[in-house]
Amino acid sequence: MKTFTVDMCVASLPMRLVAIGFVKDLEYQMSHIFQHRHSLFEMQYVTQGQCTVKIDRQVCAQSEGEVFLIAPGIYHSQKSCTSPFEKMCIIFEVPAPPQVSSSSAKELFLALSTSKFFSCSAQDMASVFAALKQALEDWDTKVCGIDEIRVLTELLILRLIQHRSAPESETDDGGYAHEQRAYIIDEFFNRNFHLNDGDEALAQTLGVSVRQLNRILKSLYGCNFREKLKEIRLEVATDLLAAGRSITEISEITGYSCPANFSTFIKNATGKTPSQLRQSFSGKAPQTRRPS
Image (cartoon, rainbow, N blue to C red; front, side, top):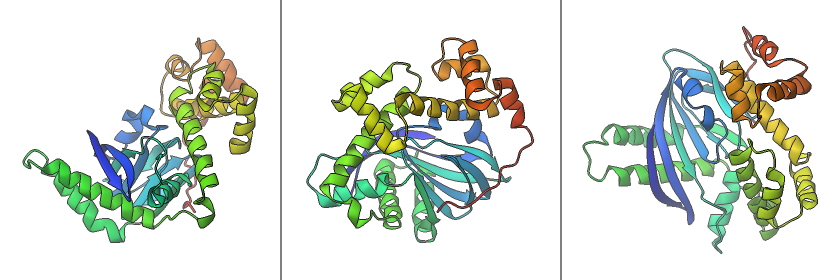
């Protein structure tokens, strides 16, 4: 992956390009553990072959010529692929919900943030993806290569969002304020799922009491802070167990002071020990379905 710090602007909405690169075969699954749940948007375009990916709780098929957009905070990992296989990944961020009066910026932000992920055919974007791939290959020989990459990326984001417009009912000021608060909460969980006392910190960030925070979380997720934290940790731990990471390492990543406490958490949540849970993944081929 080529990493960047490139400011962009799409329909008056400030953004930042973070990375672009190509994933081949299963290297994404094995080398990007911490990219599974990150605070960035990720656009994935399959250039060759097909694969299955787990996005949130859904296993989806990705085929050649399709483009996916995954929102921040959505747990995702690649599970299998054909050989040969290649896809382009474009990682970008909206640094914060825009504090601007521009209606186009608000509408674009809502269109980006009001779905966990969506996919569409990249037929009308194929030539732009091809030009972007060429620009990356010519990176070392072009003086102004970064400007070309920035412009092409902005165009791709704009065209992709044309396939996913925000519903009119979500574009009023009340809906926008709700999205701002949800953004802050998701960002906190993305970065701090290893913390055991994060509820007070998040409540302070939002300017509410812990009791009010839990009411907010109940309305957003149907659970309180502790329940949401355990849900995220279980998702992370399950995928890392399936990927073969050690129990000691996973316990540290998910915020448990010792492997015994981690094992108790897994046992209580699943009815199985971490070793038993790892063994249950062997030889299972999940059914795939298209995202709606």
